[in-house]
Length: 243
Ligand SMILES: Nc1ncnc2c1ncn2[C@@H]1O[C@H](COP(=O)(O)OP(=O)(O)OP(=O)(O)O)[C@@H](O)[C@H]1O
Ligand SMILES: [Mg+2]
Image (tube, helix red, strand yellow):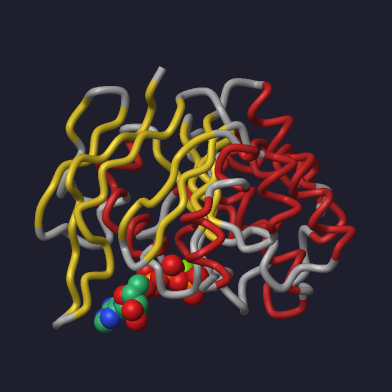
């Protein structure tokens, strides 16, 4: 079944068509990858389907429901969660506080500390255990390694219980041991029913993790299929290698 689909999605910045007439389909309940060379429009695509940027044209649907141009919080309520290519962890908040602001992003920190709901705190602790950084609960964001920040950001995404999770380069800049842990977590969470859409340059991770791969080149989808299908597609080799 199709999960997130777009038809003719387009977004230009000045003269650059960052996403150019993109009609793509991601499979519901599966691990999908979105790959392509640097600057091919992957992050802009994520920004369009999560409401951070309003597309110039085209539509985005989640299991048939039109989500085009909705505000980010409404798209989040529809069940889509996302992480950012450049991690968004608050440096002067503890790990636990970072998770609590994920549920109440508009509360000032003082209010948050006074009014944190026991259920939210319990959920945050469960998720820290889940991603393997429960021992860092009281450590400030700025003292985490980059890989630990990525795990914290994933826990933050999970606080809202999204059924569809968009990850923008989860393995970027992360050491190999943590890459394996992130891959294993994505598999586990998928086995529990969550759909993933992962932008990633680490081809070993993409090929071993995903059921379905969409390839962008200069804002346009040039191939969609299983990892083996896209790997052997001459258009994909051309986009990456210029051969
Ligand atoms: N806010 C912006 N203003 C102007 N141009 C932008 C903006 N965001 C993206 N672009 C341009 O749009 C194109 C697509 O960028 P995007 O960040 O979506 O690519 P990407 O596939 O995520 O690349 P990478 O793999 O390097 O993260 C690039 O040419 C980029 O310079
Ligand atoms: Mg990007």
